[in-house]
Image 1 (tube, helix red, strand yellow):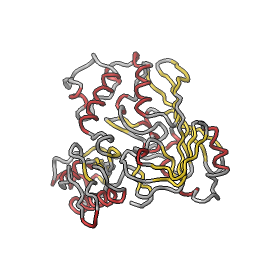
Image 2 (spheres, rainbow, N blue to C red):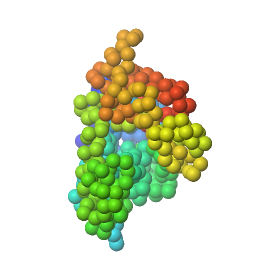
Image 3 (cartoon, rainbow, N blue to C red):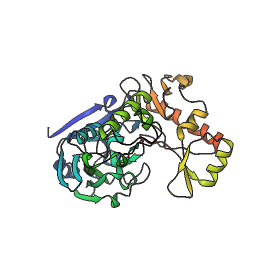
Image 4 (cartoon, rainbow, N blue to C red):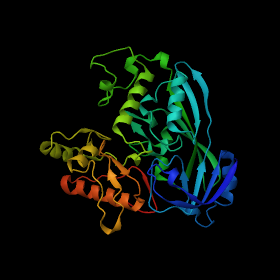
Length: 361
């Protein structure tokens, strides 16, 4: 490429919600070595709008309410095995690689560990920021190191897993979005041939059943079979962004004090609750809370001239959808209404997973 500049760049196809928006200037590069020069010139801190810079990946974790003045896309695409030792492989993937492509590539090489994260939209570079997770696995468990570019100094750094400070849908990178730009991620993955069934995580709700296994089943399946089951589940339970624009799960599962969870469970014994980030907390199902408030399958009203195309998926209460012409502002207003309803009924605050661009939560 290596560097391309697009003025008034349309972003509708660059965000999975499919909302209409544009960037005043979009800069694309397929080489991370271009970053120091770019951040010394157009993207330098003193340049107009540099503080508003939006780094675009697959656009799967964004709600754009107002388009940015300046956007950057790092379109790097390499994946390679760095080393194989004992029963582990070290894999390095560039930030621009589509996440699902990486998952399937690792399975083709005979590596396990990412199968529960199959079909998650987005790019490798976005995965550590959010510490993406699904079906009982978080990506931070598989990361060996993250290579980053520091915007202010123009220097590259390498963070080991501990320095990434991974937590539930959180990381050191998410806490300082304007400081770091992820350029590549290294994964430490077990070799599939060295794993027996006990080394695979299949006990998340619905996954074992999808694989057709009895509770005490052992053997007869591997990482690829787990990935295939996860893909079937996601396709069945979540709307296709190509049909109804969405960013996957919009709300994080709230973590509350154990005493608060116990009080809620006494009144609502069906509410799914799990251990939180310590023995003193519990993680509640945001989907159950939203569904209990009657939001699944509903659309926002058209009062005030709205399109009426912002809604909640009929398949899953956590997923907000754009049925066609919804704006980012309409989707945000709907999300706020849902959160207020859950808080009013259950006394629980729920927060969004996606980054909101051009507005505050």
